[in-house]
Image 1 (cartoon, rainbow, N blue to C red):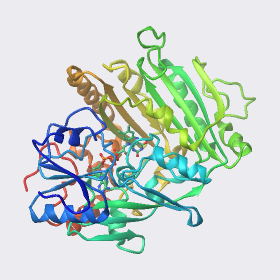
Image 2 (cartoon, rainbow, N blue to C red):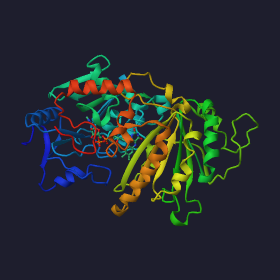
Image 3 (tube, rainbow, N blue to C red):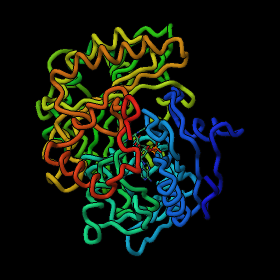
Image 4 (cartoon, rainbow, N blue to C red):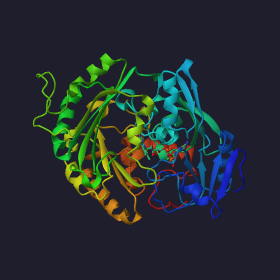
Amino acid sequence: MSTPPGSAIITHLHDEGFEAAVLEGAFNAVDPGVRPDAVVRPRTEAGVVAAVRQAAAAGQRIAVRSGGHSWVASSVRDGGILIDLGELDGIRLHPESMTAVVGPAARGAQISPLLEAAGLAFPVGHCGDPGIGGFLLGGGLGVNWGGWKPSAFSIRSLRIVTADGEALTASATENPDLFWLARGSGPGFAGIVTSIELELRPLPGAIQVTTWRFPIDDLPTVSAWIVAASPRLPANVEVSLVTAGSQRPGGLGDDDPHPLVVGVAATVFAADEDEARAALAPLGDGPSATSGGALPRASGAVTVLDHLPPTFARLSELHVPVDATYPRGARYLADTFWFAGDLAEATKPLAALMRTAPSGRSYVLSGMPANGAGAQLLIPGEAAYGMHDTTLFIVYVVWDDPADDAANRAWLDEVAEALLPTSTGHFLSEADIRAHPERVQGCFRAVDWSRIQQLTHRYDPAGLFHGFPTARPPER
Ligand SMILES: Cc1cc2nc3c(=O)[nH]c(=O)nc-3n(C[C@H](O)[C@H](O)[C@H](O)COP(=O)(O)OP(=O)(O)OC[C@H]3O[C@@H](n4cnc5c(N)ncnc54)[C@H](O)[C@@H]3O)c2cc1C
């Protein structure tokens, strides 16, 4: 393949630097074991158009990368061209129209400080480093997702290069089918997004965070406390519950008297301090706090290992403690499970599962979007992203040594076996879809899955794009 106009670099298999071009841009250190034939890094949308046309003419399939944060390295595929959009990372704010236009490789941690300085906000990801392109295509579970909905619902329009090498705009009024598809089909999207117009919001005047940590034995009481408080927590309070091991950030490692803990974080996105205080009030001072009967209380005493009272936080810094749980250079597996039951019901098997984890860095993040109203949060059929239920678990398996790969895979399999019987579906961006391609369908409502398949066939009839990762390369 010759260098398409507007491309910064093209690297071929066996060239010096090829391995780095493929692997260094992928966050997960686990090597998927396949390679494309070449990597192209376009500098402009015209460069993307040229690369798509050349690949199509040469009969080569295309994989796409924005920020390289797919857990399953879905941009690394067997054969064909990897179009790496790393150069398309511009951010342009338009405060007068409350919009921003961003390149797909821009990161949340780059976007939020600029928004904050302009008194604006967007539901950026909880982690600062994923590319906004892949994050939004997968639906985007960003900050305040119960209040602001998954982030893809704050896209106004996208620029897309299609399989026939045309660049077009997709929005609610222009190419609405592609707009629908781009908001949720993630690594299955049949096109290349070259820029995204975001709808912004006023920066909340009082973002506050409060946290608690308890020994894992208190998990039932802690979960019951959150469930009891949830009906009175407004949607702009985001509560997450984490079960983590002794190698967690801030943990004491082997000397930790409480190697397994339950962490609870509540973040409120309020206009002012009074609103923030009122919004957090249903959580009281914790699960066993005395509240004069006005606040919900769970039965039984708990041991509070530490507690941070409500403290102001900046939008641009919310990702910092989250990023610490995803060390660079580590090996990862991730999987996700939706449940119709509440957090107390869903967390029942968790303590026992955490005790068998081979790595003390692995953890399970759980929460109820919109504090239990997640199943009603979205308008059915509004976008491809639509699989939403009451409680979501995201399992992160984190380790360093390749010799431990099999043990960690076996643990994730054990967790999945325990959770699948009651799970109602998965979250595409963090599901274990390479090892389990059958999870993909479970990331969508049945009616949406049919529409995704129809639209994919319409926009990419020859299968130019690799599409959803598969365990084995498909026959062409
Ligand atoms: C540390 C970490 C933290 C995360 N935290 C969150 C979180 O808080 N919330 C959340 O929702 N998700 C989260 N994720 C998941 C993340 O959003 C997805 O993996 C997402 O796909 C990453 O986007 P990316 O552009 O960096 O990935 P990439 O690996 O570059 O892309 C993944 C796939 O998406 C498709 N794609 C990407 N960009 C384009 C494009 N421009 N045009 C067409 N197709 C494209 C391609 O098929 C590509 O293979 C996290 C992932 C990691 C590794």
